Length: 511
Image (cartoon, helix red, strand yellow):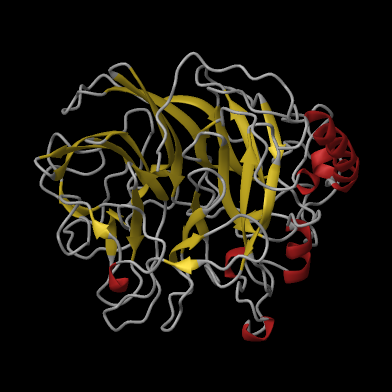
């Protein structure tokens, strides 16, 4: 590790260059710029105008006629991190960190697709020291201007991630990228990846300690595509090749798989799946990919092994709703399909799942309605059982509606005694619907709905922004595992602020 004095000098030099390169929107930022995170607080990933202000009069979109700092559906948009406390309503962010929009050394710019319903998951590393998020290695304004989005151009997720530009058939070539964020506000976007999630969304990145990664997402869905599913990235930094874990469906469809959140708990690799790719391979479940976690192709490309009891045995995720498990939208006696997004293990026998309520397939169900909200599952005699679904306070609408919230997307939690404090973001049916950050407390030992638990709205996303993932703030101001010269971003004193450890500890997945 470099001595503090050396790191500070390098930081000051990097800061001067980076501040000059920041966008006009970031310079006009009314929210306090984050130079470090406070342990115990929440961090929310945000797509859109993370600066929270359009007073500089510049257009972040690059589109003719676009208003200042406004974003259209499927445009490239900056990614930001907002910090909130765990209590209080109608909150404004404690501070905001806009992730890099310019190349700096080995660090790439990183953007998200505005309005995307399946990306932006934010995760805490297993050691609690870093945050991870996946995105696209491009400057938002430059991409939007060049692609003439919503005119004749290409939505960001439909960009080509193949390593050979000649194979992109005229579609803009944009690599996918992993961002690793330290507790000191430092950002490393040097892990740039090709040949993953071609013409589709990167969704999730999990790391045990910031030195290697598991990533998850979707490819084109075309026969012969090998770019979707879960991949292992053996090291941080430039020049990495992602190793396929799920691979292509082995049933003869030769379609790469479609996966969502990936994480490690108790030395087992888990992933959520809600997919209709591939004839006969519709899947809605949470499954495993090895214990210890696989680092090469798993299960002969037959996909994750579904958790016992989590839906029907054919993988459709079909579940019969009862009076005790209804979310108030569906009804007892209906067979619905699950649609798991993010999830949290409170312990080895208790699993909370953010369900979107908008399943991607209908195989096996008798009703198109899902079971959106926060599901609590218990492991009983080796099989997972749905105890109940929490939804009061979310104002859910059926997935047959054109807009509104049908369920939840982001999720994190902590166990405090015999209670579980959970924090979630909503899943919307229309890409540009209002998004929110919620909290709820559940009794860990309950196996039936107590009927007195309701979600509390902590914050609503400001104009021109979408809340996506949520995680606890990293807890240690540890230097990132790479050169300080290309990973510092912020203001003077970056990385050396004192950190207040929250009064509570939260559970993290460990390898």
